[in-house]
Every structure is written in C-alpha cells, then in structure tokens.
Length: 460
Image (cartoon, one colour):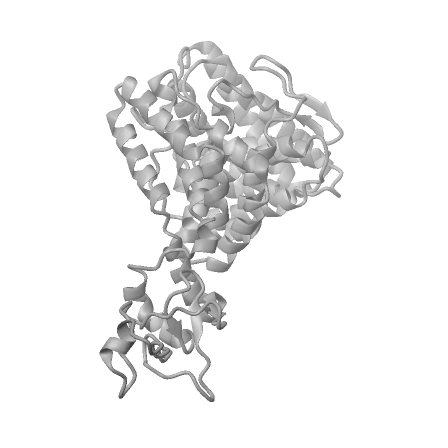
C-alpha cells in the first residue's frame, strides 16, 4: 500500500497548485483513507456495508484532489491498486448487496476504474475487469434511470479496454494503441456493444443536470449527471468504445454476431437518427476528433448490411458526411477531411462482400438460395452466352426461326451438371452463378467476389 502516496503525489504535482501545503494535506488524507479502506476490505470483505462506507469516504478524499486543483484528467491509481481495491469492489457489485443501490455502486467503482492506469494492466486483468463490468451492465434494471447507470458502466469499460492516459506531455485519451481484441470481442458478445448502441439511440435522460449540477437522486442511489454539451463530448467515450468493439468483431470474423447486431440495428430508426446527430459540424478544431469517432461508427453500421445501408442513406448519411468534410476543410483540418473521403468511399462501395466472405467461413449454405426456374440466370458461368446445342445452326441460335437452345446449367466452379443428386443453387447476393454446394462456392469466392454485386431486389 506504500506506493499509493507516490501515485497520488505524481497525480497532484501535475495540477495547478499541486505543490502547495494544501495539496500535501489532501494527499495525506486520501492516502490514509485508502489504507483504511483496504484494511476494511481484508477484514470484513467486499460485500460488507463498512467497506462500502469507507470506499465512499475514499471517493470524497480523491475528489478533493480531482476538483480542488485544476488540470487535465489523469490517473491516480495503478495496477497494484487495481488488484488491492478496484477489482474486488467491482466483483462485489450486486443488486442484492446491502451496500446500496446498483447504480450508486457502479458509479462509485466506475469512477475508480476511469482514474486507474488501465493501460498498465495485463491482458488477463483487463479481461477479468471487462467481464465484471459486462455482468453489472446486464443486471441494470429497465426504467427511467437505466441510461444513466449504463453510462457509468460503459464509460468505465471504454476506459479499461481502449483509452490511454494523459500523464505525460501531448498524450490524449485516444492515443492508446489498441491491443485488446480478445477482450473487446468478448465484451461485445456479452452484450456491451448492444447496450452502447442502445444508450446512443436513447440519448440523455430527461433528469440531467448541467455542468455545475449535483448528482441525481434516483431509486438506484445518487448517480452523477450525464452532461450533454454542444458537441456530445460527454458520451464520446461510449461512441468510441462502440466503434472499437464493432471493429474488433469485424477483424475477428464474428459473422454471426455481426449479422445479429445488424438485424437489430436495422429496426431502430432512433439509432439511425442519433448517429446522424453526432455528425454535426465542429466549430472548433479541438472537438473534431469526437466527430471522427462518430463517423467511424456510423459508416461501420451503415455498411454492415444492405438494409442498414439503405436506411442510413435515406436518412441523409452521405449528405451529412459531405457537409462535415467541408466544415473540416474550413477549419484547416485537411487530414481529417481526407479521412472523411475514405469513409465516403467505403459508403459508396460498401464491403457487403466482406460480410459474405465471413458468412462463408461460418457456413456457406447460409448464402446459397435455391435456383427456381423463374430466377435462374441464362448466362454461362463466365457471363457469356451459352454455345448452340450440338447440330443446331449458329444462325438459328442467333435469332432465326428455330428457338435458341436452353443453356445447360452447371456449377460455376466444378462444372457439374444439374441432375439426379446434383442440386444447383444461386449466389444469394447477386443471383448470378450457380453452385452445387458450399464447398464450391467457397473455392470460387476469391474470384467471384470481384464482380459480385447485389441483385435488383436488394438494391430496391
């Protein structure tokens, strides 16, 4: 426990007035309360009321450092404090505990997670913490204050997995190199990504205070106010976490989970509207990165399925992106404007084929459809007209009195002809080539994906 003084001192010295006698007194008080809280934990356990009372007093002590001296956000606890105090408290959060309502517990412990040096934690520590946060988020009861409670947990999860710290000149919350894909995939599949999108779609609750307001007293305890600024800076951490979890699912090839989320998101117009609202034009260069995080998430979702692409384009996504690009250029942010060009390119040529490729890996039969007589293509596998039948004059096949021979349907990969024991199916996306099964479709995909485009009924 001796290194808690060092962490608190390094934290405070970087803030205005952090070397004063008043600062030293605050450091001593917080360090003494930390040691008292850890001893209570060791003696009575994390589920005891006395432990949570001491934890509340520790929060008040470090808040005196956080709010008593101005400066950028930073961490005041490290990996050792994570093991000694933060993780045991996180594991003890439960609706059934005597320590107080769930929202109050999550708000209290989540604040310690946010101000811990999460980047220094091992992958095992981060995954364990993420599992506990997902467990608590899943236990949040529905109701008027659910989004405020989710905000506490999602912000802590985003900090734990994706965001760096600001201790050191020039560093920002978004400077961290992302190296925790397994934890991100696990959290997304545990429901955290869906809850983040739900939070974004529902937006701030009606009971929020402003920047100078007090925490809200709810049936779930005192919960800090969620603050909506002009640029939605307050929930940028949630948007960032959602974008990184979605990206992690794509990179891990989690086709089934992406498909499930895409179906859910397609039926939520409130989410579509919320994503577009977050693409508002920045008035200051320092707020532009928050817009880019929203751009990433919006385009990722829009290119997840044809239905989502159609819905978000109809809502004005492309127009909003083009307007945002112009606003960035007017601020002299040419690099970010070029990034918008890249997202516009992805929007114009959505990589649905990439999702098809993932689905092939998950099971090719899912994207083959039966080839009915009315929907089959009359073209040969290569796209050219079939050759005339044996013995038929070429002129007749070209348009003479004799009807052209019906082309023989074959598998576009192995050439098997339709017949007993061989059932041909169409590519479900473009309704073009026929295949005798998933194995042939997988084998042909590297070449076919270059020309595979949605059929007419998918474009409508």
